[in-house]
Length: 577
Image (cartoon, rainbow, N blue to C red; front, side, top):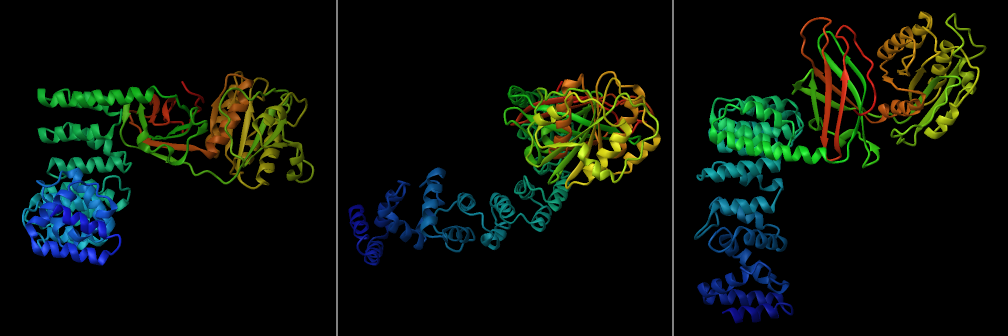
């Protein structure tokens, strides 16, 4: 029989219909012998194109469905490979498998779990949903749960998940939840939060992992709580979930929460902790990220907000947007880990215009900090005379906008450093601020003002100047070198807070140019980190806020001190510790 099949298949290149008729004749003449020989060929799982006709014939006869669902004939790998070949020849083969699961075409030994596994490997299309939905009521409970998983993956429908969570079978509920791992849809997240409270440990664990993979930082505290659940099944599941996150933050959480586990439970937790420590060490061993906390503020209600930028030396660029998700960040305050926090990327403007007001005579050098700039940027530089003290600001002659000629515009950081070289003379600081603000407002783009103050700068600005600057709705970014007058420092810090700007302390004039570049980058590639701090008394020190970033881009660390809860903002140093 084997030689006869070979002969027919060889002739199929010349006359396909005649060859198919020959296979039909052999099958009708001796069905048992034909299937024995054909099975030997199909088990090769690497049939040459000449054997495509045989595979197609076996599909149409319903023979291949029955064989592939029989574990005695094919291993899983062989069955998947052969099923994919059949699917390429007959696009409806997955439908035939699904129908066989309903009992319409199956005969002989037939493993429904194997058949459903093959269906899941062959299709992600919704066209099989009507059949698969019926399988959720299959007499085999394992088929029910696997069908629920497959339907959920294919449809990603909140209605389907909601309906599946009403099933009395926890396997169906658990697999339904698993199908939505990574979904960021708001409706799905709501249902996963509901499933996180399920009475069955596997359903709850799958829901927590789904929330984590969707980027929901609220899952962190929920996993922590589940680790302390009194039931051993929930404890084991929580340890598994923490391991599946591959998140180094769970080293500390696991070490604390599982300290009271029994011997068997503790051993599993220690294995997970060891794996996470290895992951943490791997990430910390990568090229370091530069993290800069540009602004930090905490209100009396304990709401903390940080504006940050993150530079990757290995990629030679500032990270932005989806480069870092909320789960890449680890936040703590006063030594206490913050599990509930938000991280939002700042939407960059199409163009940014930075006005720089700097003391005349200050020599700026680009410095060694990163200065990776976009093409759409414009710097305007205006000097103020450090010898001009306080007093009223003279009204400029003509339109302030005409005084833009007093500013030097450049699109290059190196040119910026040269343009703010030693220059004598200039306007008083207050007048320079107003002229610079009016000038940048006359240009297209996002407007910012960087004010440099150091030794010799005025002691204070007049209230009139402060009010007029604040009324322009332009973020003012304060860059303070050592030796700036305390009164002026406080004014510029408050001005930055009122206008939504940032504050930076730098050690000397040689770092000012890089600080100005950082002002630009904060408008282009920043992240806003926010959380609710712990209130322990009005006016008390909330302690240090520490930020860590663990990502494939590298590891970074930064620290800021919030000086008082009564103050709505504080000045924080830039740079990596």
